[in-house]
Image (cartoon, rainbow, N blue to C red; front, side):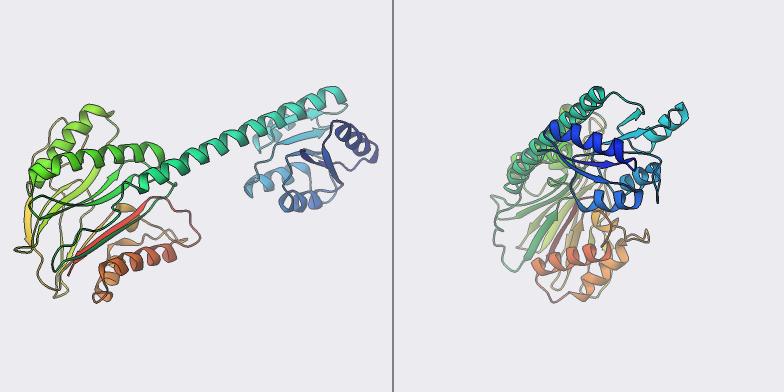
Length: 369
C-alpha cells in the first residue's frame, strides 16, 4: 500500500485530500507547515508527496528544493493557487514531477496520483531487475579473476580489485605458461560498469588464448590483442594494459605497456624506475608495434602495477592520492608479503578518499620476493 504525505495548511482542503486518498486505499499523513514537511519527508519513506506552495514556516518551493538536494527521489506534486506560468515553470525546474493549480478536480488529481505511483512502481521493478543482473554479472566476473596463485619459486605476488559499480572495467590475471614462466596482466577498459566489464571479459579470453604459444614475447600478445579489439569493438572503446612474463630461472621480467599508467619498479636501494608506455592503448588503431623490454628483479625489489583509479582517487579537498603517497606506502611496507601490501594500499586509498564517492575501479598488483 502506497504511503502519501499531504502538506496543506488549509484544514478543509487537507481533510478532503486525506479522505479522497484513503478511499483510493492509500496510507496518508498530513502536515501543515513547511518545516515539518521537510523533516517528515526525510524521516519516513513516502511514495509520493502532495505539496502546497504557500505554507507557514517554509514555502513549498524551498521544501522541494531542499528535499531534492538531500537526494529524495519520491515524486512531488505541487498543489497550489499560484497559477502563473512563471510559478509552474519554477516549480517543475526545482524538482517537482507535476504542478496542479487550485481549484482542482479531485478525480483528475487522483488520476495524476495513480499515474505517478505507477511510474514509481515500474521504476522500482526496473531498478530491482538491473541490480539482480548486476549482481549476477559481478559473480561471473569474480570467477574470471585468479582463484589461486600458481607457485613460482622465490617469487611473491598478489593482486586485488575493488569495482566502483559492482562490476569492473579493471582486470588482472596470473597465468602459468607451459615453459614454467609466469604471465601477468593488469588492464583497464575505458569507462566503468557493464560495458567496461564486457570489454575486460573479452580481453581475458584473448590473452589466455595468445599467451601460451607466445611465451615471453609480450609485445606479440599485446599486438594481437590490439588487432582483435580494434576489429570487434567501436572506435571509442579501448583498453590500457600492462602485460609481462616473469622467468624464475634468471629473475627476468619481460614486459609491454600499452597506454597504461606506469608501473613502479622500486629497487632494493629505494630508487624508483617507471615502466612507461611503449605503445598506444589497445583497440584504438588497426596495428601497434610489438615493442617490449626486459628488466631483472633482484632480491628486495618490488614492482607495483596499478590502475589509474588508485592514483586519481580524490579526497574531499579535491587532492589526488597520487604517485608520491603510493611510493611512500610501498617503501614503508617493504617487509610485508605482497598480499598484505595490496590490502594496505587499498585501505589507505579508501581512507584518503573517505566521504567521496568511489569514482573509478581500484586495482593493484604487487610483485617481488
